[in-house]
Amino acid sequence: MSEPLLPIPSRELPVSARAPGKCIVFGEHAIVHGAPELVFAIDLYTQVFVRPAAVTRLNGDAEATRRNPYFASALARAWDSGAPVEVRAVSRIPRAAGLGSSAAFAAALAAAFGAARGGVDRPTLARTSFEIERGAQGVGSPGDTTAVVGGGYLAINGGEGEPLWTVPGGYHEWRVRRVPDPGWVWVVAHSGIPRSTADAVRAVGRRLSAPDGPALLAEFARVARDGIRAVGAGDRRSVAELIRRNHELLRDAGVSHPRLEALIEAAAPASEAAKLTGAGAGGSIVVLPIPGREAELVRRLARAGGLPFVVRPVGGAELVDAPTE
Ligand code: PMV
Image (cartoon, rainbow, N blue to C red; front, side):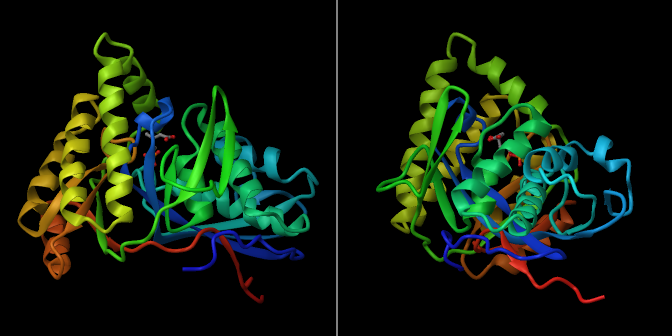
């Protein structure tokens, strides 16, 4: 894994950058309300190519400057030169799947623009990527954008030691800490059901304002805190138990879905534990496989109608060689 704190160096246009997707192991939704989260960057990428042009376009579409909220937000927040650019973006991360496609697009673009503006350090890149995503989405935490900028395993609002950086935002300052990598392989699977993160976040917000909401939030926070410790210590048995508990809480919060439950059931014979990952209400699950049975797990998930990927933690957003044309 590359060193997470290396800045994005200065580069003249054309510039190409990529950012990975992410997988939340513990604490989605609760993080929006200040609870801890554990997230890692996964080896599925979005890559962007940026070059000077007469008219600003995204994948050939000049309307994208108005119609694509993430592109519009990135231009407004990370490209203050205003010079027209042609952007091409390609991605292996399924969209609206809870695997970080929008964070990866925001961070890859912010990294490319940052390089062209003289380079950018990682805390700034993380903050800018969050502003881009928040500007487009309206709600949410900096968990996803932090994960795809920092790479590896990260605890937000939790963990131990000096923060790598902090992200200001609303009522809360988010502290980001490195969590030791236990060296595990994970499997994620997309249900094929797209959903809106913003709608799911608002629904959970309403659920947490019920009389038992504070107790539910406190249990989310406990599970994430214990989970961060257990992953850092490589304690697989505790991690499996906490993953199952976290999924029960997410079910209680109202963001599971029959297709996610079916995928979790299909995974069971080859998995130690599974839960939904990301906003839920569709989207994806993450599975801690029984070691050595990853291929069987992938077959089971595909047979049950999921789109599975074996994933490992990788480094964060980075520049890549621009194509020569
Ligand atoms: O499904 P995604 O990738 O949009 O994940 C969102 C995670 C949430 O905690 C639900 C929202 C957030 O911004 O943290």
